[in-house]
Length: 349
Figure 1 (cartoon, helix red, strand yellow):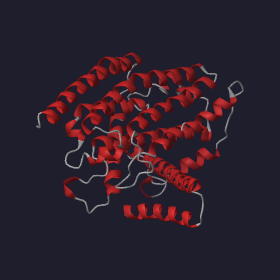
Figure 2 (tube, rainbow, N blue to C red):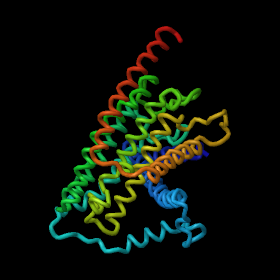
Figure 3 (cartoon, rainbow, N blue to C red):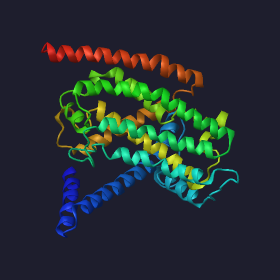
Figure 4 (cartoon, one colour):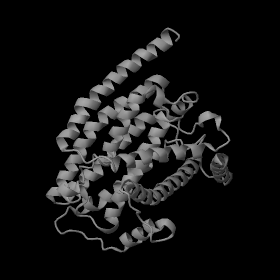
């Protein structure tokens, strides 16, 4: 199946080149097709994940969940989308208009940019950068800016507190996440995503870097503002936090962006720690992209499991966990990894 995608991309490029179009516009056209595919992938996953979230929540709470619209409630998300599209887009009087309107649009920019370097399968990556990991960490940190824009421009004290919490949370958990991923980079000696996947052909890094995986998992949960780290919206305290003044599709865009970021962090986790598109137990007859999607949805299930199991942390506990637990643990992991890499390479172990 992956050959179909690869051949389709090659055919598109050769077709455009056959029309004697300048190479610059050919590259631009192929990149545009990639962007359309990525956006379609994000929205398709969002529709599935909203229903999956509700079903997982219902399972943990011993109830049925959506079960009225369509078989097993599979069309509930579609109906909710139509409902949100029909709601009035209210623009409060005292907001900073352009910043307020730009925030829900810009929130989708980082996920789209991040998927450009994610290898969905063998030879199925839009841009295989030599600094792929560095690119991911740099772009992922931008997702906080639209949330701060939303909180500041809303002219609402609860929204502003939510935006400030998003920035504090990002700074606190970005450091342990970066240092945790550094252990994987030290083993492979490369920042390239495809090289990291290839290095896991014999053993997945979750077995070589279990502490790094745990650090990444906790930090990614905080970075995506999901429970038990959902202090940015914290309904009992801040109504809806940075999103309080938004309605209709404005609010829906923030809601969908949360699931887009969830797919991103799960894709990165599958690539760095679960072998990416590599098939376990030699089951190579199954297409590589199916293995990748299966690993991504396994990670998503873990994130949902945590959300519906643990209560929300207090702000001081959030900071304590980030700076006094995860940060020292990530430094210790780097030290142990460095010793292990030295012994392996220098002593021939």
